[in-house]
Length: 340
Image (tube, rainbow, N blue to C red; front, side, top):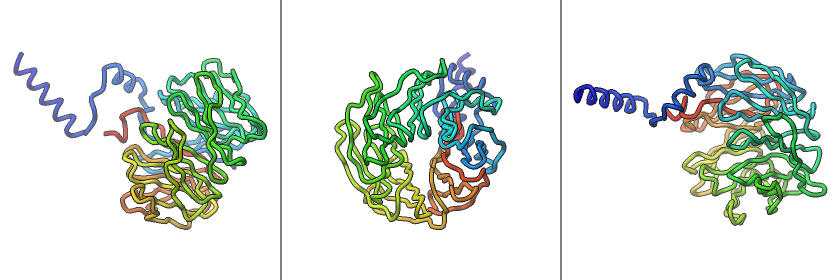
């Protein structure tokens, strides 16, 4: 019996050593096993012009399928099981519910005019939708699949992108140079942050302590404290910042600049641009692979996604997708295809 226990311990140690993976619970292992094909690591890329989503297999670095959507799909988000995705169909005025197993849009939920940004609560029960055409954020009950509430941002507000961190929802107003802070326990605006002109994508760091705002017309990346809402720093860019991703250790930021057709890499210790990647027509949205060794950028003026090698700091390949790609989101079960 003692020999068997030692043998099992040796096997477990060897497995962890070779894979570099963390231990998981039986429940988590069961959930992953049930997911089956959902454990494949993929990117979903909405095409504004073709009204569909291209699915990219990350390992093969090529498209493997498409999903039909409503009109002009822009951004999407996955729930934590990766069995469902939600896509903003801007010209349809709907949010599409995607079944990632059947690869079909099963339902469209009517929302306010020109839905654009999406954020989903950790329990997958509440979906927040920014609608560019009015002053509200729509709140969808995902079980009932309908809008249950509208959060009023104030007269003449124009919401654009949003991100959820804990019980705070941050929403950019691209026309009024603001970020609204919403307390999701009562869905009320509790603070307004004044930003540089035309704030676009907003993201938080890994622990949710910092807020990164891509202030487009101000040509800068702005950093705020998510508790005090005080500005921590302003980082100058050489173009109109559109989107940003930050490495887990916060050593590097990668910023897309749509109007300038380029991507810049910023050292967050010195706040200086250390690399510029030109000739990326309409570089719009960006996402890391799980290991953060590569960044994938939608080149909205083409039908391509550019792949950036983070170490070499250069574009190493492009992947064909639908025309006018907009958002890009990774589909991978927790701990699979990147943490290992």
